[in-house]
Image 1 (cartoon, rainbow, N blue to C red):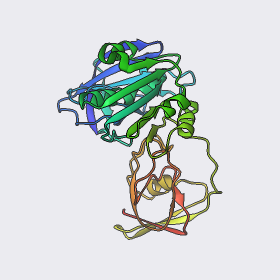
Image 2: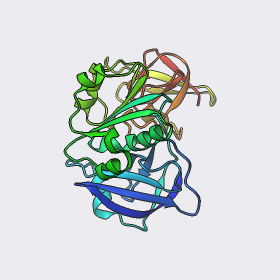
Image 3: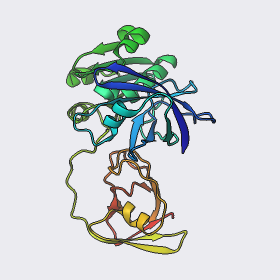
Image 4: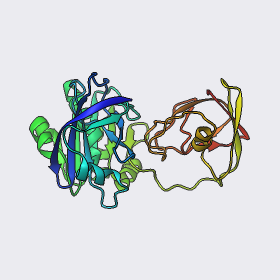
Length: 292
């Protein structure tokens, strides 16, 4: 964890506040485009926010949209946080990294611009061809984008079919925003060229949950996981201090390495080989061996 102090809070769009965070005594950890942090709020809630400032700067910047049906996080940020407040934050994690390419198409909807902002800046700095389409009822950082990138940025609802038809042979597409926009992008662009980040899990159907055993290789313990509990909860109840954030398979904070067995991946990240996210993932086999 890191200690940070809120240096500034400003309104950047209707219902969207940008917070600048500085290190409290120690420099903040380095990060790259696409990274996010966990923020532990004084009301004991933990929320994940994309870093949307300059990776070369000493401070962090995040942007928080006030959710109409807030679960207590965004409402608290807007109504109670003020400059000077100290916060506990995680070190940056990146489950949405910018892969080097000669050309990029970025598509952002609303607050989905936050991970895209530093990507666009990095792409332009690297001399790659880069285009950004930004849409939504509220478009945070619109003035900043116009000032920095001029006609590389288009505003308005994207026509996915038209964009896909004009895609260059080496163009990578990065997309973040509301679910209907992401689903349209997944239907229009080649899967091997498209990278998306979701802030909420999709509604999907899985096989009924069944009980299994988690074999913790390094500790020599076996933890039973009942059908009505998550692997994460079973491990934590057994005394294993597994980190957790969103508990929805979106943030990546609970990543574990597995050694044997066949996990059923239910995350939205796309777990790397040999990795799983125990907040949502289960096991297709009776036993799943973990590096714990």
